[in-house]
Length: 344
Image (cartoon, rainbow, N blue to C red; front, side):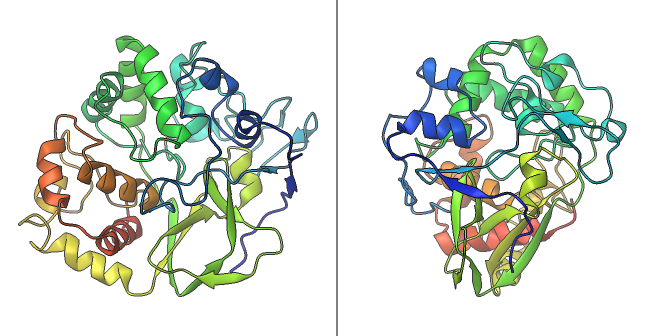
């Protein structure tokens, strides 16, 4: 059950400040901190502030992912070669497979400085995204535009105040123009989602740490019980760090959770009606109601919990808040596991 990776982890000098560690470890740049738009300056912990720390992955202090700079890099299946002087430049994400998607609008490919980062950096050129953010491919343009308005108006916030990607979206929502949002929404809605997450039921998982707001295997890792959680990790850490949008993720889920999630999703047990009543017969979306099938289980779990706790208060949120009000953590785990296992 070892994750394939040629990337190494290294300890960072203990004297580095929290901000420097975060900037070194992740996909939210120093700009975000300098504008005071993120979290309180306290050291993140593996436990965080929610009962679901596995869904709101917080960077492990004093750890970063080693990256080889200023040498030609390639990924499987691509004829493109990049030399990275800064692999975490949010205004210059690599496009390894330009033949696989339409031409990206400038806001997706390059963003606009300051604080309107290239959408394609976090969500990738094919829109599939990563566990710390979301898959935008194939969502309706109307839904994407509404969510950006909710970020801008403070109607979407994270239940975990230390979760940097949510803070980044607040900054982008506050600074992006309506035209930029519409261009990005039209682009991502035109894409076809693909199978991106391999869901595996298991009793045990590798020991992990968090870097880049995602779980990665700990150096010299053993195994530990999965417990009542989902552990979503890169299939290939090196390709994920290179922002290869042909390399997806694996989600370890508790044994039996997929079947239990199917029962909850497809019956009237939750909220008095099956989820398909609003999200479509195959849970692939219905108009402005988003698709659920094949989406990141970490993301789905965060949204269910945020809705339950009033952190999402947008247009459709009151209806969803009623549906999820009585969900236990094990229900959220099961629902998220089942939805992630479906063909998008």
